[in-house]
Length: 238
Image (cartoon, rainbow, N blue to C red; front, side):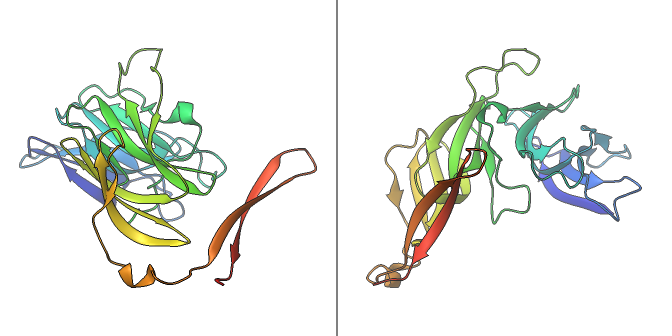
């Protein structure tokens, strides 16, 4: 009964979805990626098997691979990163992380307000969102050879700064995204595929731009073991 996140294949004859069909699904969430041939009596095929969970499967433009957000951690292990993972649809092997070299958690596992990752039109890379130091930035990671030991240069940041990119969509050579920060209300922006030419295209909170909003400042201190711990302080407006 625990099926979610359906996604049509480019050819329109298959559905990818995530499902937890384990005996412990009433107590914990350990979803896997499945593919269902539509209009046939064939049973769905399970593409992933592991102790972790999966969400938001997205087909590559050629229908050969599926990118999804998930991890291979045991239930309740929230101290480890969530990853952008890719698995082949016809000859499934263990999924490979495209975000691993970044060593940051990928945004979107727990029902993002919109799309949190998307394939480029040529199918050679995946755009995704990842959190770092309170911000959420947009990254691009090349697919490369899924069977190769060398996974390539790793993710590159496309959009960064002190803000949270909470959802995104790509089309042709343009990225549309929603961005916010505690001192800056959400709006919709567009940019070129390489992050240049950024421009705001919505005015949903224009009435707030003339007001003096609270100021957000970063603060950090050293823990007893020498680690730097960062926090945020909101100062009243005025």
